Amino acid sequence: MIELTIFYDATCPLCATEMDHLRRTDANHAIAFENIYADDFTARFPSIDRQEADRILHGQLADGKVITGLDVTYRAWCLVGKRRWVAILRWPMFAPIADRAYLFFARHRQRISRLVMGSKRTQSCDWQPPR
Image (cartoon, rainbow, N blue to C red; front, side):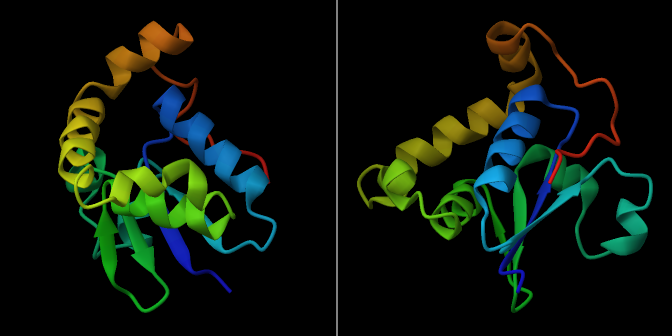
C-alpha cells in the first residue's frame, strides 16, 4: 500500500538522486514518486499546484493529507527504515532552523546541484528513477 506520494522536480539532479536512493531503499513499495514536470501531471493531480510544488517539496499521505518540505523528507526516510538519518530534522529545537535551511536549498537547488554534481538539470523533464 502506498503510504506517501512524493511530488518532486525530476529536473533537479540532487532531487532526482535522492528520489532514486529512496526508491531503491523502499523495499515495501510504500512510496510513489511523481515528477511535477511530467506532461500529464496537472491532469492526474489537479489538487497539487505545480508552481507551489516546485517551490517546496510536496507529499500526499494515504489519507489525502498534503505535507510539505522537510515533513515529506522525514516521512519518506522513516518509511524506508532510515529514521535515524533524519530524526534531527524534526527535533523541536532544530526544526525551525532546518526548515529555513531547506527553503534556502529549495530556492537555490539548481545552482547547488551545479556546484555539487556538475550539472544544473537532468537530461529530460520526464526522467524517472528506475525501480
